[in-house]
Length: 256
Image (tube, rainbow, N blue to C red; front, side):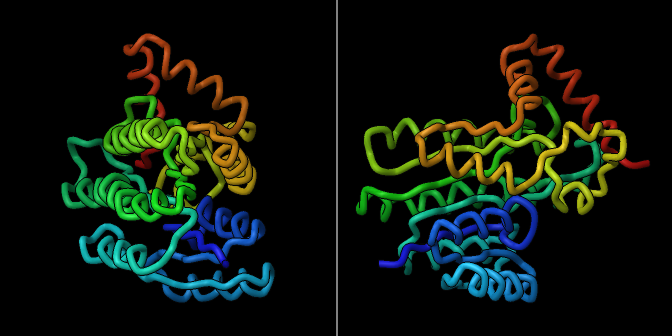
């Protein structure tokens, strides 16, 4: 029987890499995003290159209706792999940011992955098989505004469900990458020209490692030696130092 993987934020960056990696593994792909034309192009490319089937769910995950649309699709179909990847950042300090944008960030980064996991887990438990990868971030271990707080939630929830599913055939993990070459920073109007080249990761490398580690039962995937070091400092270093580090990173990213 053919197996299906559902990827949110599937048209660019890490999400797009996941569609190719999973298609190469033989999964049919459900693409979830807002841009219908880009999804059609991506779906056609996957079908041509990997000889898999594809499906498209156009949804704005910042809205209740968009999230409910994906939940309904999951309830009506068997999903073997769920990748919660959709996300964005806000390039303003919390005290001066737009409140509606802050709410949308929480809806996309927190509400949606929580609800999609809660929706898909019953069928995975019934089959005793399935994989969930939540695209979190090393930013979840620093103090960098709502984005960091949201990613911290996603990492901790992934760890909790991983433990809950221990001893079953269901694999849960959080991918916690550092700076990765995607459209994320450009869309967020973040200044990144001062970042050293060695700090950048490729999305294909990040995703290949994340999938391998998920299948091996590892709960946290942190690609790159540089981010293994930084994540260790962020998780176990003195909190005043971590807070200062997080603030310095965010200030440098904000364009004037």
